[in-house]
Amino acid sequence: MTAHVSELDQFLSSLLPTPQASQDTELLQQIGFIPGLRETLMVRQVHALEHATVWILSGLPDRRIAPPDWTDNSGLGGLSTEEGFYLYGQADTVEVKRSVNQALERITHGEWNLAVHPRCGTNLSVGMLLTASIALGIHLLLPRNPIEQLLGLGVAATTASQIAPELGRFVQQYVTTAIPFNLRVREVSVVQDGWGRPAHFVRTEWID
Image (cartoon, rainbow, N blue to C red; front, side, top):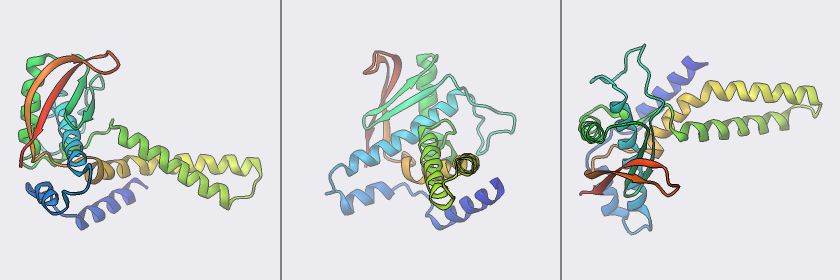
């Protein structure tokens, strides 16, 4: 199943254009009159930079694909906004500044895989939606017998768990993130978020 999903992902990826530095600038020039468009584009780019920073802070080597035995630091997390992103977890401020600048440099110079992270909430959302959709389809197709319905639910959960990681990665790459070609890092500060939790806030600004 995973092999087939990977092949599908590669096929879909081949149909989509390679990221270009001017793509969001041109989009704004063409349809910038749409309310909220700039903010949406900003959040997508910030989201990618957030992921890239977490990767760098976790020690990802300077290569396009992590080694097979490499794992990320699950103690780090983030939350993106149109003004920048919050970074949660134990991290030195100097190291955060170094990592976010390195992340911006690497992701905009070809390491586009840094925009996608396996612990992103997008994956969870995709998995839940996929499970619900498959379960509903099976519920409508199978007889209303409780045993068959339970078996169908198990099939739905198993199928979704196989497909969701690759599909979530695809949705991250092409929907919820974008290469931050238009971002500049303004400052990194120690703050409390809206819920009073301690965090670093990486403030960014849009450049054309």
